[in-house]
Length: 187
Image 1 (cartoon, rainbow, N blue to C red):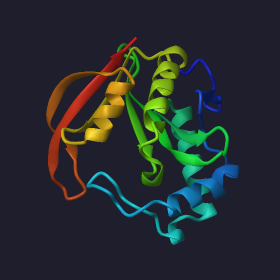
Image 2 (cartoon, rainbow, N blue to C red):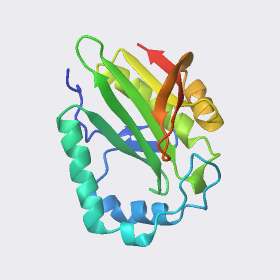
Image 3 (cartoon, one colour):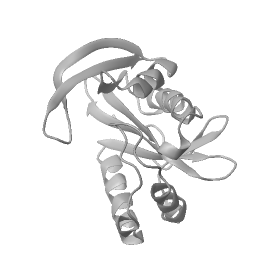
Image 4 (cartoon, rainbow, N blue to C red):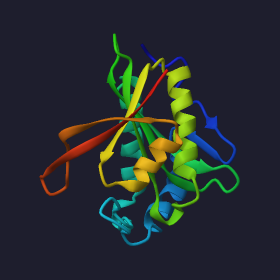
């Protein structure tokens, strides 16, 4: 089942807009990526060096996002503040299985210099609603490491419920596998 609304639809909440990235977003995106603070915990990666923030790399990223959406594999949206237009982070729906399950994974990330303002919670609530209403999904889960307190708080605030722990489910950057804590929302 494909989305009922196009990938380029704009979705909004009180303070935020979530939508597919456009080429005109390059400057706001690159400024936000370069403005990130030093990593604050093991789940953070800090600022991105400017040499990786080229317009050509951004265009390549947009083409990959569009191709994944056309294949109904993954929908990656930018999170933007309504008033300023600033890029705050990303949120995504990754399709795990369509028929018969209609099952997906919710992912979210707010730039570390924008955290603590409720943007992740607000965008997660919005995208869950959109995913059920417009993507035709029945089950959405978010999976995080068991000690990722911020991600757990976001899942809970978005109305997701703790379901289980999947043993040795998530790979780390050091080649180790860790348990994944699963939160779910169902239609």
